[in-house]
Image (cartoon, rainbow, N blue to C red):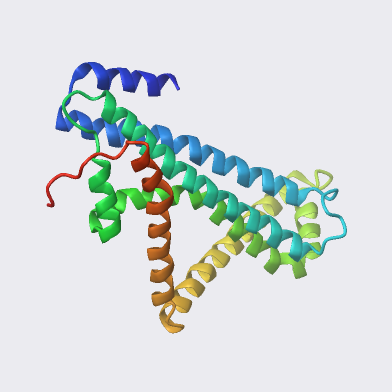
Length: 244
């Protein structure tokens, strides 16, 4: 919060300069706002992971159903945080535009137009928003890994316990720890490759590209209607500049 206020003070006192505006936006304002929501997304994922490991939570639920429920809750929570991030970014940019003297850090009307037209220069915006989903995607990968490991769970657990048993000789324990760590790391790598390969195969072979683009376009329309429309009613979005 202190860094945010110092940034606002510098914008309101130093006047408007295009280079200063770009540096303030991309190295100050966006990272500060984005960090808050990334932290919240990570906290939600960690809390749901701890909830899934607790045997006292829904003891009669099947393991698969519990994982699906927790994973779905994580994705829904990430989507809500994503909307909150979009709204907070627009609000923060509007406030800094109001503070700046003689110009805008970012013209929100131009940004809205670029989003609606699918301007390719908005890759930075995608990177900012998608980072909020990273913890949830890792959670889903862990859940999938857990489902694949489940049939071998007792055997892998016993192997790990034997490998880390301090009653064994120091040399045996050291080698066992190395092999167990390499085995688990290799298994995670294999599952990651399978996950990426399955996604690529589904998009390329099952012709899912068009439905995914429709989902993408629908998400952009929802973003504009749920974030920019209220911002425009609040008077945060000014007039667009001349088309580039």
